[in-house]
Length: 157
Image 1 (tube, rainbow, N blue to C red):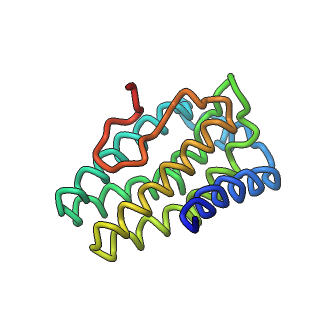
Image 2 (cartoon, one colour):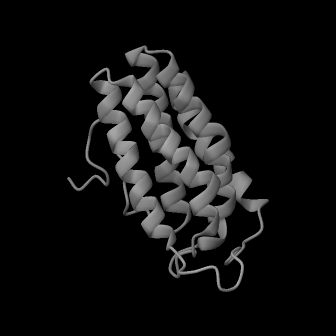
């Protein structure tokens, strides 16, 4: 019951945070070079999230922590400069991404640091649930992140 309530609370908090954030179409300086697309950054995040899960499942925690660090860098840097998608609801992305970076990635780091498989699996599932909530809110619900570490992202089954 408690896990179910937590699973519902996190997406609700992320959606609420999105409502309080302004939309910024392009934060780069003029002439700063080519714009990277939001989807391109998220494809890299997905690949790293999949590798993080596979590495942790195999007990390769140093590799998993490296991948998490790369995801954190994407959320604190590259994603902020990315051009928002033209379809769906890009206006929700800054708030959701900010909340994900502050809350969910910290939770995932704590799960990894515990070196406890159950703790990590639970943190991974919460992170995947948050990913899926953001995908639905932004009009990209067809991009599904499995809640079980080690599975391919996006889920295609």
